[in-house]
Length: 232
Image: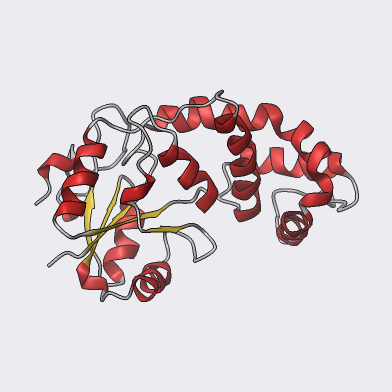
């Protein structure tokens, strides 16, 4: 019996267009100014970026941890190559926090999401999120939706600090954190490689194929669904 619903965000609970056409441009436009203004507060993230750049074959310019412009340039590179970089995601989350609090951002979830959250909670199931976006970004997104604040339905959040989403060990670690056997966890995502990793860890998995998104290759192995209403 499924006890935990583990959810991806982009293309699963939230339209891809909102992430790529609203959130990402919002953060990119403000990145340089944010780094300049908060440079002294970002020592952890800067150290992680310097370490990441030292192993990055796609970026040959040394990142100077004392120069905001150097750090911002590498962050912009990571955005351009669509790297799932933990420090980049953390800084994006900080920029979005300012945007949400200023009323400049309002997040979007699919219409079936709030009702599913309520139904699953009433059925005694635990809802958790696993996204490449930082835990802060996740909480902000679900806390400022056009359907209201949905954070009370979500018990746990996981990001790339626990591991990358295409690695089976990440799902084993999540299962341990949640205190459930992997077989009690149902992972929902629109990315087949993530579903493969979850299944290899022993989790149940279903592919979410939203009508409004380009999922790419649909994996019939994971019994595609177009809406959360099709579950249970």
